[in-house]
Image 1 (tube, rainbow, N blue to C red):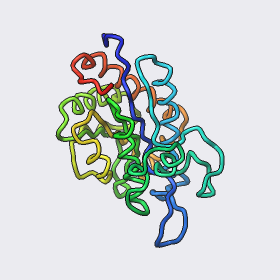
Image 2: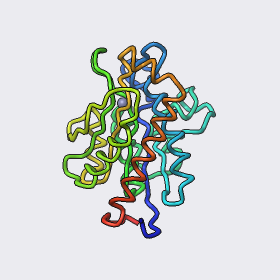
Image 3: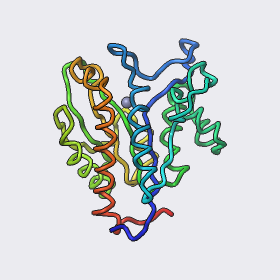
Image 4: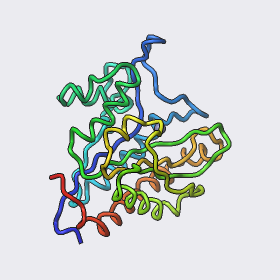
Length: 239
Ligand SMILES: [Zn+2]
């Protein structure tokens, strides 16, 4: 039971094209492994998860990138491939969101500050992992200082049991590589999910299957639903 509450969810697909001032060119934040780039793969999962959440009247969903826009953007690539700062600038968000830092830091800060700008109840960050090629599996992160954030992470972990790779558990951290994200969402109910290791050949093959992209979205949606059905009444509403 959620008492008719509508939950505001920030759905973040990690990374995207940004302008690299050292190389003087637009670059993705992660490099290609066997033809797969995490920056784009995250959006494939986020698109399906967006639809599932958006069709559920209990949720109001906000994007960090223009998931469905195939027009060519300022980077010379389709807008869904671009990073958060370009999207937030385009939708008229205040400058503190999209004009904070330079290069990749500007992109990462905008991704993080978007959660604050949209004043969401829950933030979800979609990622794939890397670890030197040997590691495989999925893991769910939450902020050390959020009890409900931890509860969300455990609900997601339970739901992700049927992933085709191993469960690496729930992790709490402050100094993850998406540090800005953790800083901006401190104390908030947020989870970052690393579904696969893109630099592991077996996980990488699994990531490329459409059925697994859909599975990531469906299991995550189910985890979020389980979370609000269990803890929704105890949340302090933003809206
Ligand atoms: Zn990532």
